Length: 246
Image 1 (cartoon, helix red, strand yellow):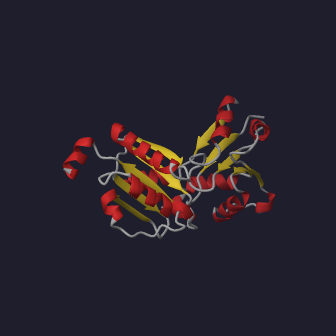
Image 2 (image 1 turned 135 degrees about the vertical axis):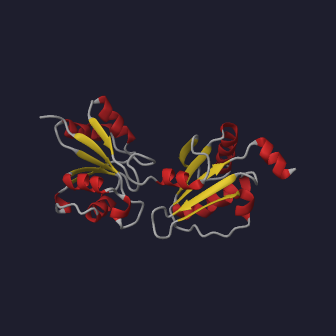
Image 3 (image 1 turned 90 degrees about the vertical axis):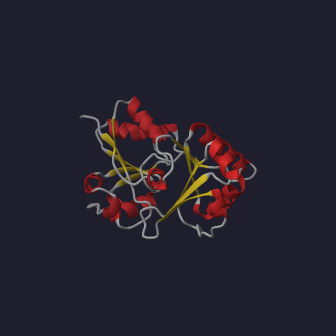
């Protein structure tokens, strides 16, 4: 029996209008699978229901895949696919394995010479970058910043310096209930002319994307509480900063 394929499935970023953000060909593929490797089974079942999976959800084989999944468990998943079963790799939101578990499994799949197919869907860092107006040729995605001070401000300062040196957009995310703490740290740490984009509720009806310099953000009142956000910053060249501050 030929080996199966690992299909890297995108999920919505929180909305319920699946057809608006997931291509039809991807939904067709989702409906053909009955073995899923997921970050959280409960939300995976909710997505599969929205996607119109024809099987009774309780009959699907759904296994949890997190950063704590053991090497033995990962090997067992790979063995299932090697045995001829197609698997759907599904993250909590967005494209699988991007800022979510899954990369280790994919690397093992390559070592086992299994076919891995990434499928198109929403990726919040990429959507935010597209709409930011910041540098798109050079960028770095850092995931989550340190929670506590002064480590968080040190990280922000380092990213700002990296951005200025390489003319590179820096991208990071935060747990929604800590959004305001992160924004406050950015406003108190970054240079006044550094550009900051805050992209909230991407693909949702409440979506908001705004890019301003730090000076303008300090004069702005914004509500980010419990909203999924992506933060992007781009430091200005030294000459531009000197001109604006001199």
